[in-house]
Image (cartoon, rainbow, N blue to C red; front, side, top):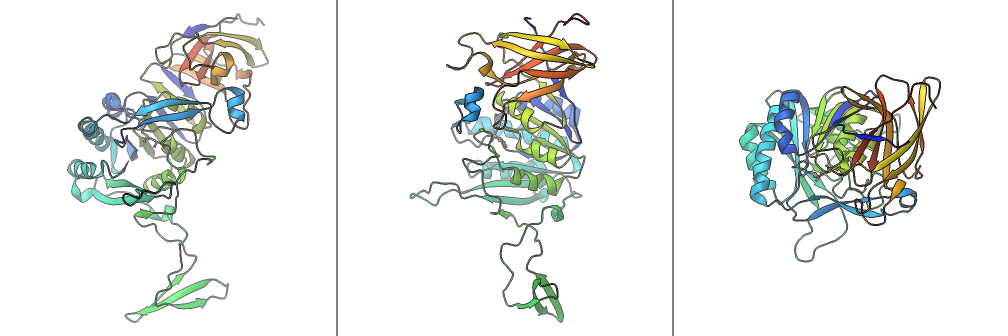
Length: 421
Ligand SMILES: C[S@@+](CC[C@H](N)C(=O)[O-])C[C@H]1O[C@@H](n2cnc3c(N)ncnc32)[C@H](O)[C@@H]1O
């Protein structure tokens, strides 16, 4: 049966224990709505904005079963163009940072991830908006990616500016202790305790201080132990500027507790949202790149979250013809996806038919949006498109959603006669 396209501006997923929302749209345009909805309620905000590199960034997207079986991505699709110019960038950041302050709880914290290009400007701007007294750290995230310059020292670190909103803030370094890099041997005597553990001691002002070699230590503001994502790192999503989960885990863990809200106003591939999900916290992400939607569906799977489309879910494209069959089970409907036919020219060359499907789901159209009940996304483990999904019987009109390889989402009503096959 041929399905009727419908417009949807919110997709709802069930799950737990973490929950949150992802907004597809322009952060700047959405700030007033975000402040109205989350003002004073966010515990930690992480911002990894464009760096003013002048580059165009892309995502390597796998297409169809063959693309998911191969070791490299099949398409390179632009995610964002980082060439806004300094004045426009700083104008945007001034509004984003002022809104970030309004979004934070009084005991909340802000992390702004940048590099040498914008660091001096944003440090001054943050001192002005948050107050110099609320500056906590200039964190150096150092990595050893390939490529060495012979014209100057190679630039191998980013800067993360860390501010609190107010004097009483809720920082937990004990949750991010790290293994010691090397034993503290300077001028200390070495001992072995009855359990075989090595410790050092030193006498100072009449007191003896002891330190075990394997005691965890609190991280300093120079982070060299986290590394960066290697080309073939299994964590890689294909999104050019993706940050490592370990980095976001450290940030989320030291600054938030279970159930507290973590927000990322330029969430890209969704690393901060995944870190918050794993820590059983609440997350809110915003990005205007449609490809982020397909990644969010994978990275947030299992939690309760909404995708809110401030920008049209289908990117303004005409909905492709879609065909499916539905059969009744006991307490569920089985939906078989038969055809998805994007119009010629609406997708990159060589992508057609069901190969254009990156993920799909079945659910119900309800007054609050499309409630997803069962979903499938291609993966390296399951590259072939699963063609049948079962939706438990529920209130609302049966529907399906197709996420195509370019990040557009198309929704269709599945008209059915009760009891009919
Ligand atoms: C450096 S990337 C973030 C990467 C992310 N931290 C990750 O781990 O994947 C910057 C992101 O900002 C988004 N972006 C740039 N300008 C934006 C705007 N005005 N509104 C919303 N998103 C924007 C881009 O689409 C991009 O995904």
